[in-house]
Length: 390
Image 1 (spheres, rainbow, N blue to C red):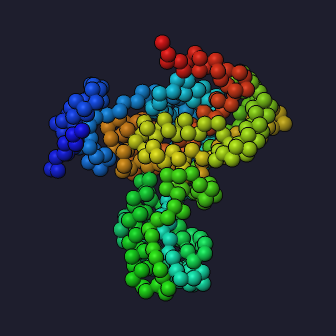
Image 2: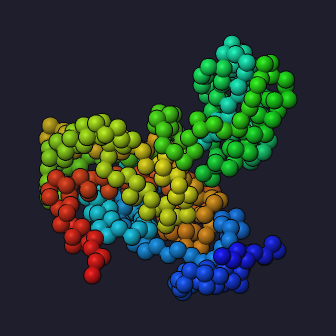
Image 3: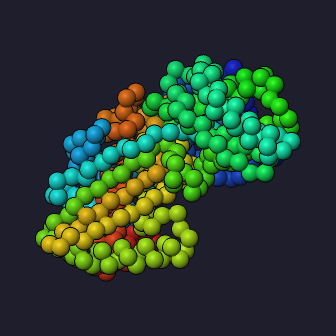
């Protein structure tokens, strides 16, 4: 089988994309007509986003809403772009948005912001590792200054320390402005650690820039507790009459189902006691140029509900590790940029606004699916809207 062609001087061009598709077609027999149809100039956007550019994978996109958000950063109505191939998804989120809009909108709050890199230092003994930890605490300001030499946006806010045997993990926590920040914090942490190594650490045997305690693109309990990305909460109180009229159920029925779901999640050892955080998050990530692998961390979360004495229903979702960006990465690609502009979330100073809109969207999806299960509309809705069979 032939190798794909490359052009070291101009590899991101329509001509090179065509040449690569031609090789793949000749070797596989598959036509790539739709893959090769796109509207933008790859030279202008893709060098930092993909290698071996050959075309596009086009995903259907719909808008749910309007979604009414009452946040500190996101305020007002939004049409939410969702890229998905799952029938009923956009309709379900739209139903939840109708309900929450009538109830006055979803209240959203970003309560923490941090991105991590966690190098590990291995010493000759646990005592030497402990003493190193004391040295790190005493020299935090110098370490912080070194880390921040590499970035204009990143700020080192703290270094968590975690010990096991003769190893000491340092979990560097940064704020990263409007970027997701994984590459930013890697560069900054490496720069700081190189300076630390130059100080002649006593009894040091080994160093590694990462050893899985930052849990990059993996779910973890440490992220649930300490946050990776944005920790954001969306909440609402639904009037009893409205639940019956719009969702064809009651607050009491929803609350009962919530207790069953809590028990099932506990038995399963799940990372989320909700229904489908990942659906809304992934659809928005694809539409808005986010790193889709970050759904692995971002989908985890907590649902809490409270049935009021008058039948009203308080409902909240907490997303402890929502990794989003409005600047850098895939956010500048043409269709992704357009979707962010629809939300007023493209560019600097907008990332917390995006986080609030995502959280509000997740809440709407949770309410809608819960109501569909309770009112026995779940299967019938998929039969009506989700079928794509001959």
